[in-house]
Image (cartoon, rainbow, N blue to C red; front, side, top):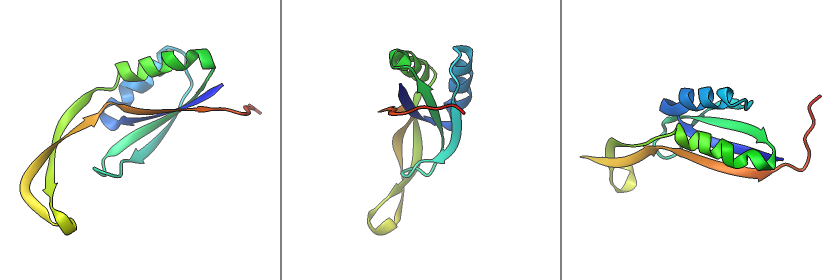
Length: 105
């Protein structure tokens, strides 16, 4: 068994959740905040059989899109510049961990 953690942009959260439910995967959603942009994310936690991991990753990837966003530029010592910086946001960051023990009581 594996535990899949997927950090998804809030803009994609509903699509990922709906697709996971449609395919019959139970998942737990947590509201999280990214450290770099301080933007809202959703972290999905899903326990699946080893042979279902690739299917879960495909569902998440198909429903998480990357896009660019302008943010205020920064300079040294926390000072802000007047020039915005374009960064890529969205997509998903996925971690897959081994589960040593699983119980549902």
